[in-house]
Each structure stands twice: as C-alpha cells, then as structure tokens.
Length: 427
Image (cartoon, rainbow, N blue to C red):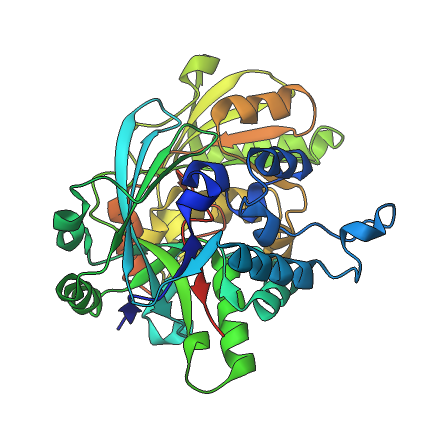
C-alpha cells in the first residue's frame, strides 16, 4: 500500500524573492544552457541554480572554486537560508496544486495534484510502479545532487488509483500561497494545507492506492539508490511526489510519435518495410492534414509518412492473429496498446530492431507533435514517421492493474510539474 505523508518542507519566502513566478523552473531535464540563463535572469534565486548547478568553467575558476557543482548547489541552499530566501516549515503540510493549461490539441483543462512525501518502495511491492519501460539513463548526477544538498529538489509526477483532491478542496478556496506560469502558458497555483484532520484523511485515502510514475522514473531510481545507501529508518526513506488521481477530469494523455532512420540509403530494407506493412495493415492515402489518427476507432491505427513517397497514409491492422501469437501470455489491455503493436509488429518485426536497439534509440527517435515528426522526415533527419493515437486513461489504468509496463514513450503527460514550489528534506 502507498505511504503518503505530509512533510516539513523547505520553501521560498515569497516576500523575500518577489514571487513564485520568478523562482520556479521547469524540470531539470528539459532545460538547456540558454534556458538556464533565461531563468537566472528572472531571479538569482531561481530554482535552476540548485537543481541544475553549473559545471566548473576553467575559464572562470572563481565561479566554482572547488569544481564541484553539487557542493556549489549545497552552498547556495545554505546561503539562501541565511539570507531568508528559503525557510523551513516547523509543522508538516501537504501542498495543493492546480494547473490551468492549454493542451497541445488546443483544448483547455485544469489538472489537480498534491505535493507530498511518499515512502520509497521497491517495484516488487506493487505500491509504486513504473507505468512504462524506461530507457537507461544516468542516475549518478541526481544521486550526487541528493547527497550534497540532502533534499529532493524536483518532484516526481505520479498518478494515483485513488483521488485525494476532493479532501483538499475546502482548503483551497482562498488566495493561493503562490502562482507561477511556465513557458507553455500553464498557470500553476499552490496552497499550503496544514489542517491535521485533512492531512490524516489524505494519508488514509491514499493508503489503498497504487501509484504509477508518469514522469521522473530516473528520479525515483535515484531515491531508491539513496535510501539503500543511507540505510535504516529516516527521511531518506521518502521522496517528493506530485500526485494526480487517475480519475481527475483535468488529466490528459498525449501520444509520442516514432521516427525511424536507416532506410533511405537501403532501398531493399525500405521495400521490405513497405511490403510488410501492406501485408499487415490496410493502407489508405490521406492528406497531411488527415495524418493524425486521433479519434479513429479500432485496433492498431497509425499515420504513416516517409521520405521517399512524401505521401501520408492511414494504416489499420487487418487482424490480430499474428499480434496475439507474438504477445501470447500478455494481458489484453497490453496486446491492444498501439505502442505495443507498433513495437512488436513493426520495430522488432519488419524493421528487425532488438530490445537493445530500442533502449539505445539506435535508428529510433520520438516526436511529441505531428508537425515536428513531419519536419524531421522532410529535412532528411529520419526516413519514416509513425503517428500514434493518445492512450486512453482507462487503458493506462487497465495496464497498471497487470504486471506489464508499456513500451518506452508510450505516453506524453502534459503539462510538466515545475521545480521550486517546495523541497523535501531527506537528511
């Protein structure tokens, strides 16, 4: 069972730093050097300074005298605390979060979440699970940062099979503690909730929940490694999460499209792919504007666009016999998942890719929008684009109830959860 608790957060004094908008930042893994500079131009107290500390620059040794960016992050936190920019709560709380956003498809939504600390569990317990297989990623960077700062700085975004938001609604009727907007225009509002009765009710409600990691798998792996390294009982056994109920009306899931390379210079491989697709799928020519299969009914429906024909097609799986044979023993919700169909029949089957190729992204890339996918084929970076439909939330839930994890990049959850709203002490 999930162990979700309030915590004594380290957070900004907004009177000192000006506003949450000035100091909040996107997750570290979507920030480049120019983005980092823009955030620090908004405020020297911006969370990016500690969550993405600047590497040692030999041309400017004074910027980081000992050359250790993680210790520099720790010193920065200490300095901000001394200046009063960061303050530590003396009583535990849960932080309520709303995110008003315009989705990539142009629709408007409001997503709800709670920021709390969650006991770190091994996946085998079933309390916290990855919802999809992840590409191998570096853990040492986040582990070194945790060791030095003794805080979780960036929350993990997880989905909960139980929704605790209704319990917090009475506490979020007034003005929020802070408001911040991200570069996509999402408006984030945060309230501190310290009512002991509400806190106890939230912990009780979520005790029966299963939590699915939607964004931040590598941060969770870091939390497990840090827990095991420190050992014993204590704050190291918990990590910072933002939890959204799977039933939340503002939860939307978007697709991630697949792009393949290595076909344009190998006409025979391209012919094998084309012939195999014609055997497995019904194919209909469509306009580029009709390439997106979102809203189409049926099993295994994709958009196809390649660099040779420069023509869009709608693919529809003819029958499921071969798919069911190859995925025998897998639950039906998984066997009817578009990304699993594409991986099994096309990537591994027709394209001859191995699990290692997929994990290492050899000849494989992802795009979060149809225009981006088309541009990457038109400019010659990739040879073939497969456009996917969004995964229904009900299918995410159905697969979560099994022991299967989706293929990598099956889902794209929007918007991201920002860094800088609260930090969780772990040491």
